[in-house]
Length: 330
Ligand SMILES: Cc1cc2nc3c(=O)[nH]c(=O)nc-3n(C[C@H](O)[C@H](O)[C@H](O)COP(=O)(O)OP(=O)(O)OC[C@H]3O[C@@H](n4cnc5c(N)ncnc54)[C@H](O)[C@@H]3O)c2cc1C
Ligand code: FES
Image (tube, rainbow, N blue to C red; front, top):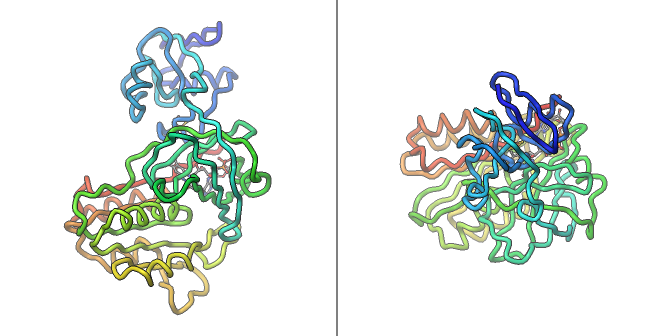
């Protein structure tokens, strides 16, 4: 058991308890989202004591050097004195440039890209809305071509952030974003390597950025995109396809990009596939030896498909996976 000193009070941890869980159990409000060490919204700083290495995984070295850590991943081994992070270091102010619906369930937010804000298409950031709710979203824009940051947000029932994005958010609103994170982006090792991209729902967001960046960099190998939805058009329990016309136009203009929209339930038009995107993709491409594979969206789909892609011959270092870990309901 360790003691956590925070804002003049001391709190004792239970066995194997994280700083986040301990403070929350004592009624202290600390910002958090994924509780899995991914979104970085629970970042704190250790004024005294060493945060364990695991709690600094994924942090930029400048933050690690200043003893920043993720409270959800920090089970202290000894007493520790912690504080909230310097907001200017972890949150960047920006403005919503445009809000529009891509289908009844997916809203597109375009944010003004702050000066010197750098990212690779396919990475994600943590968005904090005016109600101080923070959640992670993948970036669909391409920095060298677009002067905004584009996010696609699917509405989930009773969702705090997605509810705000669909009903309240408007151009001109001030929001905050984190620096970009994540390893799921295009790296041009071999421009002829075949690429397989599989996404469900808003898993299309990072893939849309990755595909356009790969083409911009002159990728010449085949690029297959499988985008899946339960039904064709969105309702609150499914998600619906979106950007279909844009992806078809891209397919028309590029002879090595192949778009496979997949619907797993209900009516399926002739020019779409019936079944789950991951099943269709692995059925079409039985051997993935030599391929790069990108998997984004629903957590279970990403995890199981990662294993199957590996068993089909893809090298683990060529599989880029971005599971959309959701905030566990309390
Ligand atoms: C790396 C990363 C990238 C992500 N990228 C995107 C993205 O590009 N677009 C996007 O829309 N989301 C993305 N997410 C998910 C996103 O961070 C939020 O979890 C999601 O928008 C729901 O937030 P909320 O505040 O609306 O719902 P909450 O208020 O957090 O949740 C409300 C209720 O809905 C449940 N719930 C939350 N999310 C889902 C879900 N997806 N399906 C079913 N039930 C759910 C919760 O368990 C809870 O019971 C990403 C997550 C991660 C970790
Ligand atoms: S990283 Fe701690 S809540 Fe997401």
